[in-house]
Image: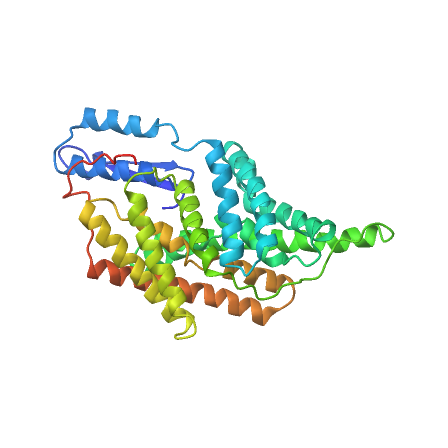
Length: 380
């Protein structure tokens, strides 16, 4: 279950009265490098290639492994992902991308502080969204009056958007994992509420300032957004930078998994662009996720690698986390109908992505850790 690990131990004689169950509260995170190593270790244990002392030593080695990426890498990844998401997915222009790049640095700092302070971690989404909204409004007032606030606000917190979590929960529910799927989806709903409330409260703080200091500099309160079409020469390097930043944030070392991740992400990205205007968003999400799953699982099968580190970067480009946050902000603005529509769209798109991935898994079954040999990825 998310945040909780339940481990049961049976006795040698399989006596139910002697069985033991332990519950461990854990902090959820996504480190695909360690996840792949643990999955490989589990496969070696099942096949008898590794005994208990060796497995324990190997597991301790994995847990104590130092992060591959330094703070400088994380700062650049947060900033780049925020800027590229703003321009490529939330309708922002070059100035919006620049502001989101700077705000991404602040998001990275808060993320690192939350990892060391449990009290801050419980309200990380609200604090991050609130401060980014305030800084975006101040920047709009002092520097760029034509700044699109919603693009900057959503793009700067793109890594905190619960799209992947909602999609994972729908996948678990579809796989009959009711308990874990239900708990994960409610946690995603809580994250969405925190982000939406933080963005709305931060945006409305400009009204409070203007009321308290009517003779001073008036902070911008209007939404100034227009349709921005990025040229092809920018979309290609922007896509490459976006995927690279996501792989860094997912702790995937620069091995051959990057090649498969780029191929899977490119297949989904090109499919979604090609289908714009031809089919509805649900069908487009299904076909894009199908393309990501087929290419990612096929590459994983050829290289006998775990498909998660290859597929997840492509799925992150499709997940509907921003829709849920837009829905909450619409509710905060008394737009009940718009909020319901955004919330419903989030779950329908997540379901489309889930079905696409499940169909891809049936079409191309990846090699599992139970049949693959031990493999240590060679760094590029």
